[in-house]
Structures are given as structure tokens and as C-alpha cells.
Image (cartoon, rainbow over all chains, first blue to last red):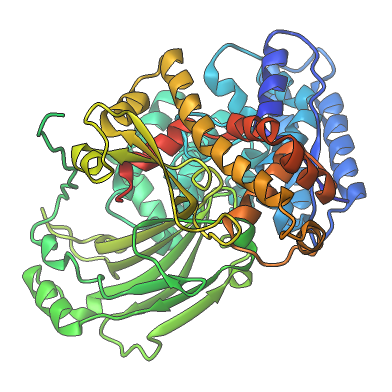
Length: 230
Length: 328
């Protein structure tokens, strides 16, 4: 199977239509790849992800917060497994992630209802002036899974907003060890949003002088502790 | 233009670390056989999957020892490290790290994309290479002294990015002196300079055509977010891309050019670094075509339509920003 992609113009139009509550069927293009993409793998991922949405968001007894946690936990496992099986040409093709975002738009829209903010389109990998690298709902889920899977404590039950703002969209995310230390501390301390924000700021400031990637877990834990205490 | 010059400088909370400045300048990195000159380089997205980096770690231990003395450190308290970062999925890997007191027998290193498959083939966000001399162990904390391990004393960073936008719309800022060189009046706002290289052979778009734009106009376009500025930027892109596609269309129509043979080479995905092929591959992607023959015919017979579809994909602000940061 060639790698299906959506060009920026197509995903832009699709996102605008979602915002306006209209239907738009984007034109799917494709690129070839020597290591062919397995169509069954892609279709199974899409259908399993949509099933997860259905099973996690039904019922009236759970809060939206609880449903979101369940959805993101299950999606993370699924997406990590899918990611590992992809050829590199697909992994690093933004149009492919836009295509998958289009196929899984119901999940993204459930998690992040459409709004007029420019940044909302980033969930679908629409390029944004504030960032050199387009990010998206699916790549974020995968990176969070990679970081959490290396930790015994940093379970993915912290909602994506924490990861998105303080780990994935900032350089802290380049160091999986530091990200784990921070996430674990947030869980242990049951930090609220304002505390998370203040500590995240201190960690970013430390990064301007320290190369976190060279540190071991003990050093990262100690830097996070000191950021909480000062 | 006023004569005010703004310079950014990092102020660090440590005394005397500036003694380390320039100590990594001997390190050389070559990408696919060409030495990197600037901190930011662009690579054809198709080339990321097979990129080769050759690194020469050339250091002057005597200079490092002198700088270390300035901040009361010894060589065994410092390391030289090379870290690679993949931007799309925020991956990082410490490729090499050794203490400066230990003999380093490995002065050169060659890396192929397959050696760091989660980082180097990243044709989306590109990758960074960071060389740094850092403190290798924790010391007793003292004010204005380096004490936390991992703190860098000097670092050097290379950023490798996909060149998909810069290839076809690359405006160059034109100041008064340049206008004089080109024989233009001072009021000229834009000038297309045709190069000596034919489109069939050129490996850089600037060798075929240079789009000179008055530097104040470029600065205004970058800073002005109004729709009028976007329209003006579109006109610039139209001039650049339109001219390029017109030349390619003429080439395809000429009897000397074997279009069938070229189509076979495209289908075989043969290595080809020419502007021509980069453009055709881009058009193929933008047109969403599965058939190379269809793409070549579209460029040959309907060049303006192809040009306008490619223009619509160009990140104009980014191209202008790059132009303003670029030395001629």
C-alpha cells in the first residue's frame, strides 16, 4: 500500500469545515515507499481506535474526565503498538498523520470540541505560526506513551493537557528521563494546574543551562525536587 | 533603514565560563560529503532516509585546560558529548560522551541514517546535533559557580531541516549597494536575475533564478500580518515559482530532452539532486498523482496551473524569514 496523505490545503479545509459544522471530504493523495505500508495494519488501527471511543465514552455514570482518562489510556497502548510497526517513511510523513487524524476525527472532536482558536487545528497537524514543528493529537499520544512506558509510576492517567503544555510542546519532552521525573512528581504530589505550571517554568529555565539528556534518573529527580522546593 | 543593530547574547549565571567560547570551533561535520558551514542547513526531504554524517572531533586540549583553570575545574570533571535530537517525535540520543581527561582515540565518527533510525530519517521536523563540553559530576553548590552535572560550558548546535519550501521560493534581500551592482535605480522593489546555469543541470535554485526584493519590503512583509502583505508575498512567490515552472515546461517541450527516459528515472526513484527533479517530485506530491507521466504532462502543458498549486503550498512567511536570515 502506498502511504495515504492529506496535503496542508486539504487538512486545512477539512478543519475549517469541522469548525463550521459542515461536511468536507478531503482529497487523499499518496506517496510511494519502498517498505510498503501494510493496509491491514492501518485499517485495524483506525477501526480499533474508533471502537475504543465507543466503549469509553458511552454510559452516563462516568464523568467526562473519567471517560477521557480511559480513552487516552487505551488509545496510548494501541497507538504505541501501531507506531512501532510503521515504516520510517510513514512515521515521518506529516501528511500521513493528517490523514489518520481525518480518519479519527470523531475521536479528536470528542476530546477537543471544535472552537475558533487558531491552535485547535494543530490537533490535526495543521501548521501553526507559533511552532516550527507541527504537532498533533496522535503524535502527542504516542510520545506520551513512550515516556510513560519507561516509568513504573508515570501512568498515563494525567490528562493530555499536562503533557501537551509542559512536556510535549516544550523542549522538556526531548529528555524522557526528565519528563518521567516531572510526571511522577506531579502524580505523587497531586499537583494542581497552577503548581504544575510554576514547576514547569523552573524546569524549562534549568534546561537553558543543563543538558538533561546527559543526566540519570537520580539527578533528574533531584532537579525536579529542587524546582518544587524553591 | 536606520543604523540600529540589535544583537542577542545569552547571559549565563556563572563566572568566567566565557573562557570556553570558541573551543568547539575545530569540530567539523560533513553531511553527504559536504561540510556544514552554518548552524542551520537544509536537506532535500527525500535525502533524510539515507543521510550520512562524517564528524571530526578536533579539540585543542591545551586551550581547554586553560579555560578550565579559569573556573577552577580539572579535565576529569568535564566531558565532551554529542547528542542528537529528532524533532517530530522529540527523540534524543547521547551518541558519544567521554571525559576530557581520558584519551580519545576516536577522532572521527561516521553515522548513517540507519544508525539512529528514530532521529536521522526525520524528514518532517529534521534533526539537531549538539556538541557540548559539560560538567560531568556534581560539585558542592556555590554561588556563580558551575556545580550541577550536565551543565554546559560551551556548546555548538547544528540544525538540519527539510528544504521543501526554501527550494523554489527563496527571495534575497536587496540593499542599495546590491541595486547599484545590478544596475537598478534605488527605488526598485523587485528584480528577477537569471543565472548562467540551465534548469536541466542546476542543483540550486539560485543558480537558475534569483528573486531580489528590496530589503525594507521583505522586512515589512515579515512583520506585517495584514492580508495585503500576504497578497504581496503571494505575488513574489508567483514570480519565482512561475518562472521556474515555465523554464521546466519549455525544457519538456524541447526535442533534445528525452521525457520518457526521465520518466523511467523518476519511477526508479534514482538519486537526483537537481532542482528540476526536486520540483517535479514536489509537483507530483502536490498534484496527488500516482502516475509520473501524468505529472510530467501537467507541467509540460499546463505549467501555470501547476505553479499556482505549488505556490499555494509555500510557507511564505517562513520563506521570507529565511531570506532575512540568509547571507548572500
